[in-house]
Image 1: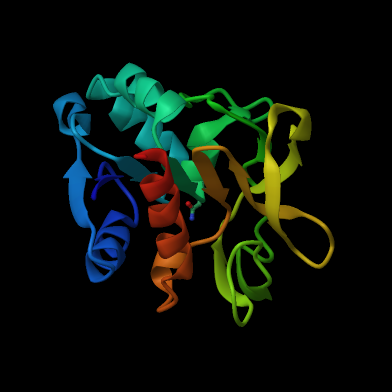
Image 2: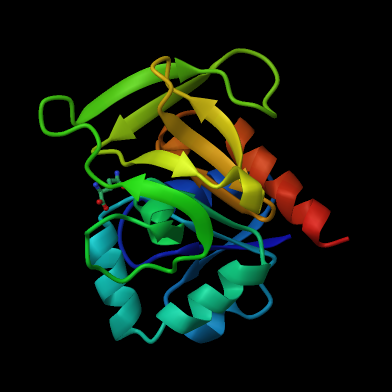
Length: 194
Ligand code: GLN
C-alpha cells in the first residue's frame, strides 16, 4: 500500500513515520507527478495559508483536487481546512472537496493549544488522546451529503468526520504514540482498493 504525505510544510515527517511503522510505503509529495500510483494521501497540519500558497506555486492545486475527489484522502488540522468546501470569509486557496464548514481560528489565542481524551467512532479501546494546536473546528457537516461525525468535544463541537473516502480531524494524531487513526485510514485505503 502506497500512501503519500503532502510535504510542503508542517508535520509531514511524523505522519510518514507512523505510516511506515504500520507497514505502508509512505512517500513525500511535492510535485504533481508524485501523486501517480498513490493509493491514498495525507494532508498534514501546519499553516493552511502557507500550504495553499506553496501548492499553488508548485502547480499542485488541481492535481490534488482531482486526487481528493476520488481517492482516500485524510486532512489533519490545516489539512482539514484544505479539504473543506466552506471556510467562511477567509480567502485562501483550498481544495473544497469535503462537505464540511470549518472555522479556522476556533479557539482563539487564550487556549491555542490543549489536549483532550476523545471517544472516536470506529476506534476500539480507550479514548484517543487528541492534541489540538491552533486548531480549527467543524461548525457543521452536511449529513445529507453523507458526512458522518466521528468525534465531538464534550461541548458538541465536531473534531473528526468522514465522507466516504475523505477523513478530517481537527487535531494531530501523528504527534502521539497512538496509531489507531492511521490504521483506520489505512483500512479506508484498503477498502477503496477492492
Ligand atoms: N491554524 C492553522 C491554520 O489555519 C492550523 C493549525 C495546525 O494545523 N496545527 O492553518
